[in-house]
Image 1 (cartoon, rainbow, N blue to C red):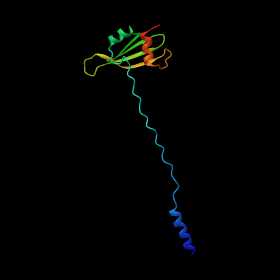
Image 2: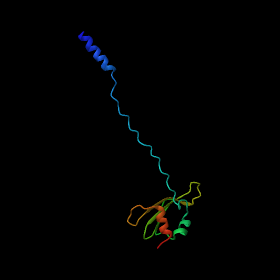
Image 3: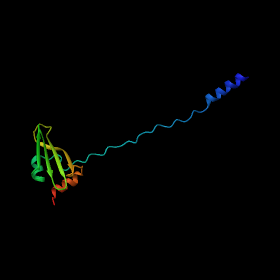
Image 4: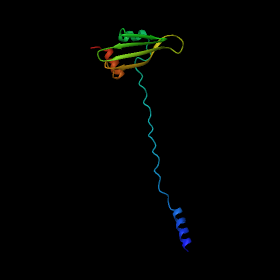
Length: 118
């Protein structure tokens, strides 16, 4: 009888509901923000100079060119590379803007500051 009581107790324990496992946390899906295309991406060297005037700095490295334009409010670096079609025409592919202190700043605000120097 004692063995029957122990066996039935073990049997009932095996049938008992298991403790609930917490459901794994699923990280929220973050949709990447589209990169804002700068108004000067795609411009040629002559178009940049016509737009902002002569650059404060010009650096050539291989087939690439970096033009730097400065104002009292910001610094803009425009990186130009030859086109993929083999034409050899260098166009702006990347733009970096910062304050004179080196802190990153909004591209549109910097472009505006260079277009309208005060």
